[in-house]
Image (cartoon, rainbow, N blue to C red; front, side):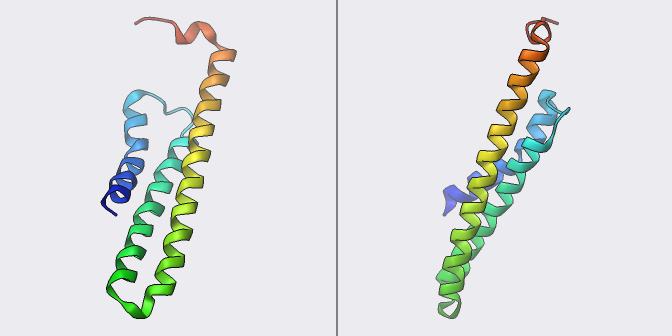
Amino acid sequence: MLEIIFLGLACMSAPLFAKYAGFEHKKLAFDMVGLSGMFFLLGSAFMLVSSKLEMFSGLGHYGMLFSYFVGLLGMVIGALLAGLDLLMEFFMHPEKLFQHG
């Protein structure tokens, strides 16, 4: 469970690192990754609740699975959007990527 919490925190910090790196012109991809981090943390919360309270074990299990799958889907979509954005930037303006300074 600790790995999922760290993954959620890393995903939530991706928009901040993207802003510092200068990838701010199209933020949708990084926002998707950040949102998926919130779903990973939600899945960890469902796991914690289902392990502590027997009454909510079924709801916690299904909530955890749903949160993980939505988080993974958001992370994959965000990564694909970021990759496509980088490729489109490369093919539209190749001289801009190889400038120094």
